[in-house]
Amino acid sequence: MEAAFADATFPTVIEPDPPAPRQWSRGVPVDVTIEHVVKAFAETPALHDVSLKIEAGELVALLGPSGSGKTTLLRVLAGLEFPTSGRVLFGGEDALGLSVQERHIGFVFQSYALFKSMKVFDNIAFGLTARPARTRPSRAKIRDRVLELLDLVQLTGLENRYPTQLSGGQRQRVALARALAIEPRILLLDEPFGALDAKVRRDLRRWLREIHEQTGHTTVFVTHDQEEAVELADRIVVLNRGKIEQIGSPDEIYDRPASPFVASFIGESSALPVRIEDGRLFLDDRPIEIGATGKDGPRTLVFRPHDVELPGARPGGIAGRIIAERRHGASRRLDVEIGMRRHRIEIDVPANHPRSNKGDRVSVLPTRWWLFDA
Image 1 (cartoon, rainbow, N blue to C red):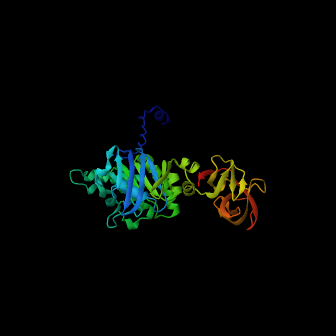
Image 2 (image 1 turned 120 degrees about the vertical axis):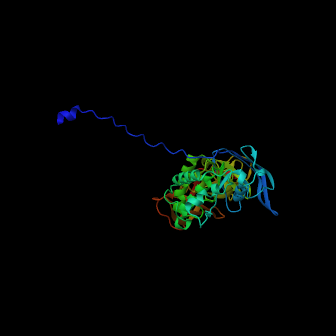
Image 3 (image 1 turned 90 degrees about the vertical axis):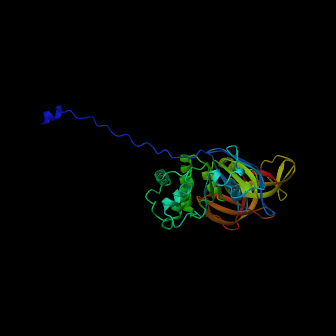
């Protein structure tokens, strides 16, 4: 038996190839050009001469506080608002002459805006089934598209549930899948994670970035959360009172802010009213031993809490006293009053730094800073 077994001839076993990675269907992304857009509601201005170029396939965050104009700008792109003046171009085509449907926009709202009476499958398919008969895909193609998107947003197997049977994060994934179903040229997201708790927001931010890498849509999203913008965006557009304060990559915005507002909105910062006199910097008529260039006159000195050292009582340091101390993530945050006018600043020290008491005297000195016109 052993000899017969040894002489036997067996067919070659061919291992099947691993399945090829899914190639996601995608609309053709286009660039977006916004030229001198002005928008006013009655006599209330919302956008002041806004100009911006967004490259095809780019993910751009519109960041700013409430009332900065970011949602108004997004609604102008979507065709839900019409500008008072200015132009909007999609791939060189005048978008203002197109209807909402003709713009091929995918829109995701903060409130999900799902149809509660429809199952997940029908919510995702809605933009396709609602098309006129001449442009509507076949039922088989719609089904394939919906199942493909359920796989993409990691909700496979939930197509027969209703929105009320899903968590907030799952509902927002359904909303994104519905926006992607129509193969939009541009994807717009208005505070998409604003209604979710902090942990779910963090998880969905990473997930959305991965989705963007796979689909390649031109994506514009509105947020007031600077952490969200820094983590997600290729570029950030910082808006304030209807105007663009700065446009740049997250690193550029954080490391080289163009104004005190940008420095305070992206990250944390303290600002002090100072003046330059004969090449020296003064706070409340006392010199600060850091470099100062430019003409004599008032300035605003801005620095971040982690860019301050406590040098002890040495010449050039700014005398102050500690008024509060608290844990701040991996560090400790000191609230310090400095100068004759008791300006309040924040300083981060290592968590193992010796504990301070309220009223302790300190001397502080910024190690990295920006000077802006007052």
